[in-house]
Every structure is written in structure tokens, then in C-alpha cells.
Length: 57
Image (tube, rainbow, N blue to C red; front, top):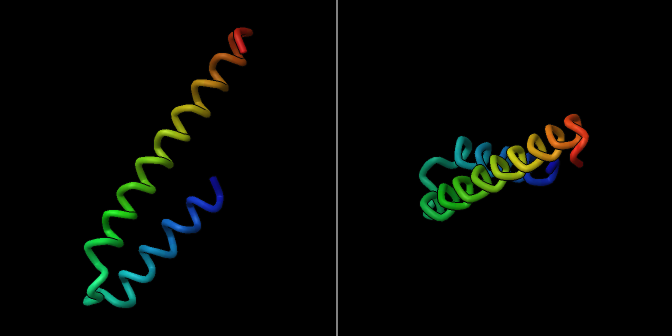
């Protein structure tokens, strides 16, 4: 998860530094994909923790 967050941060920093890059569209799509993956991972982690705290894990 840390690598994912680091990649997201790097892409966002790059776009801030080079807003006119020809790769902007591709990078924005990658950011969106990585954000979706991060959100799903966070949901899965929360679900696993909830099951564990209820004694079902």
C-alpha cells in the first residue's frame, strides 16, 4: 500500500511540475486507476478488520 501511495504522489507531483506534458492524459488515467485500487484496498482492509473484531476472521 505504501508503494501505491508513493506512486500516486509522484504522478501528482510530476503533473504539478509539468502541467503541459504530452503524457498528461495517460498520467491522469493512471492516477485514477491507482486511486481506485487504493480505495478498494482500504475497503478490503476495513472489512477484514471488522470481521476480525467481531470474531469472524
